[in-house]
Length: 294
Image (cartoon, rainbow, N blue to C red; front, side, top):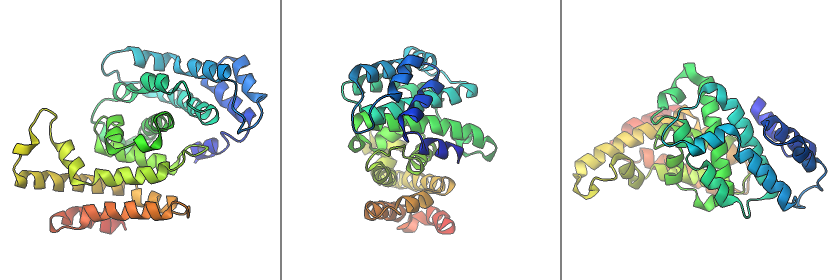
């Protein structure tokens, strides 16, 4: 709740943006002060000011280290708050200044941070009740990375493959990040992002994604017997159903659907998601999990 309140006033005025930049610890005070005297939106900030601020945030020591190091390098839990603060400030500047002329630089700088900072297959850290505080910090970092990359690349470029790539191929983390972003879509919100996330969650339930996740890239999926494909799809559907229950995806979708302008699209994608996980005699297990949750 504290994080939600913090982001609710994030773009209330230039003074709040200045405080967020100062909290990052990497933006010079004179640069942060320059944002305070800017005219209110939609007047864009000077290009030089925006670029100087973004470069200072992108050159934050931890981000610079992760961008330079090769291979996985797990980040200490104590570094997550600072990483969240910097990413939060970066998203705030992008929401105010836009991404023209610097989106490619940002994507190159942040593209591999998720796979480097988090070890693969970290579902136990996300799912275990005893690690809720650690999980929240990890998910918050990935949520902010997703918001920034979506601002740079566009909502229409977000698919199930990009979400799974951000989560290092881990289905549970992918669903957790998508749900967290649906609940906290940034301030101001990225247009149509909640609808797109519901569509991406629906894509995760399709047989195509199930087959892609179960098949090694070097394997010839055409040689897999149909019985084995069915077994893999049932297992994938069961895992996804458990993730929907664990992270309360349907609850989040219903909250997003309170906005009348996006209600129809969100309900269509959510009902298709439920249909894919229940509408078969082979999916009794996943259907039972979702029915109990509903």
